[in-house]
Length: 178
Image 1: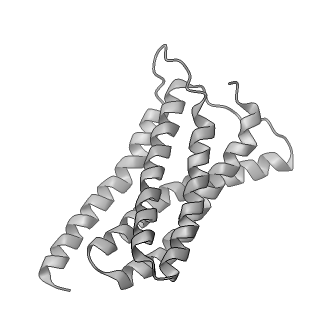
Image 2: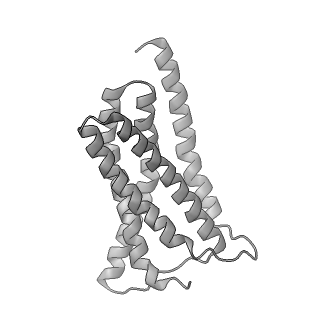
């Protein structure tokens, strides 16, 4: 590794660390804050759930693209997935800053399944932030071997988060007051 690449990688790693800590902290802080007298943005959950679904599809298509040697398409799809994930997060926070938390109303086994999916979704959505950023940064460092290695772990976790985001929405949507 050349000295220039090492310096660039250290800068990326600092940025990734700060971002990976800041995003969950800011989301947690904003999640607990309600905008006074704001009209609830009840139209957002199906939109951000759809974004999760589209992200899941694009992740799979991106993997197929790279396996077929279509690097440019793969890169565009992955960049779009990151943008969609950011849009999801903005809408998710905006919804929760204007609306009361909706509680799952199911009972019995379904309630346990819902909370298991929700908790794993939340934990992995936080964990996937640095994984995505590290994996993405490897491309800019021209370290495609490391990129592929990181992607083997990042892809299934990110896909799980995207798919379970849709499942959580489907399971809780009957209980939304809007």
